[in-house]
Image 1 (cartoon, helix red, strand yellow):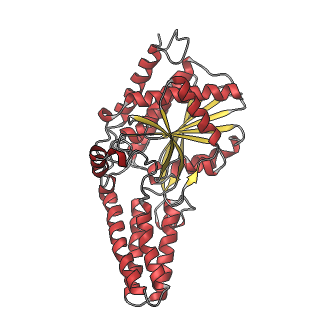
Image 2 (cartoon, rainbow, N blue to C red; image 1 turned 45 degrees about the horizontal axis):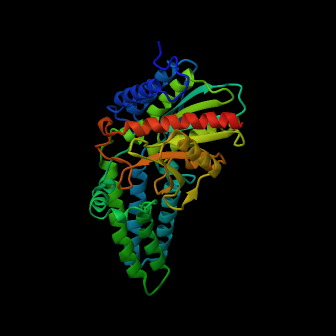
Image 3 (cartoon, helix red, strand yellow; image 1 turned 120 degrees about the horizontal axis):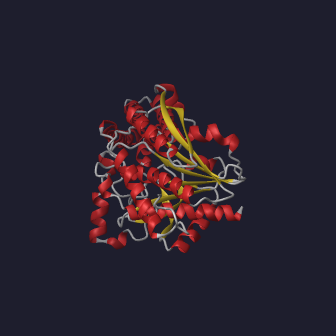
Length: 412
């Protein structure tokens, strides 16, 4: 007999216990796998998730192979080296060539970090393969659709992700972080080097100064991204098995407490850590069947920290507000109704899968989580293991998305 059976609501003690058991099962099964994007481990995780979803009554899951070009550090490191070469050309007095190469490097980094057409990686990287998991449930005849996103690949670590400074600030002067809702833009360091070289090359009197600054910044930025390239892939329990586990728990909730009038797609993308190859392929493949007028997205990404947060925008290079602010207001109202604390007004400087459907015109709400020192717990660190998750926050996010689904079905 199902532990959900007999529940008159989706928020009973039995439901909470069942959600917790499912969350732990998924995370503890998949965390030991090396889930580097496009790796055998990523595919094994997708295949396990595919089978696990199909074992839930009323769910039809499928695997979709999609193109990817591998992790982002090799491309970014190559662009960094191009920026260093431009600075060296500037120091040798080759101003025109330095300006041209610096401009190309700047444009390449913007294209890579800002989710552009990805010209550089398609030209210089070998095409590989990732895999998305698409699970369909809910009312197949409904006009309205909710797509819930997560990603099953895991990130590499590196010194740039160290949180020691933030933790020390929180311990010694917590008031400095209280109003911080947007982290520093890390990608700007990579852009600053070629920009300094370019501006210097365009000025006869300051060419060498600009080149020196560009060289110094380029060396630092390239060293940091090369450090990520050489580093291991972390277990990724928070980022983002927390979201994947919530997808499975949602599938089980929808089996036991169906929501008439709403079609639901539970989508776990691969290659998110390549900077969104998986979700780009999903939107391109399925856009014909997902009308922006009747389709809403919720993205669950790193929801295993103590404090649940609704993101309003993201932008590694240029900040972009997500489409459909009304949906985020609805999520907040549902959270209030459940007694779940949801923090608003936050913006991300890292890219996520949310930006792709947002650009396509779909209303989207993005749920993440943070620690007291305003960072996702164990973000891109080897300590991102199952034992360090806040399962209560993941369960709250799961219940919240279910309640959002009910509200959307009633509204439509």
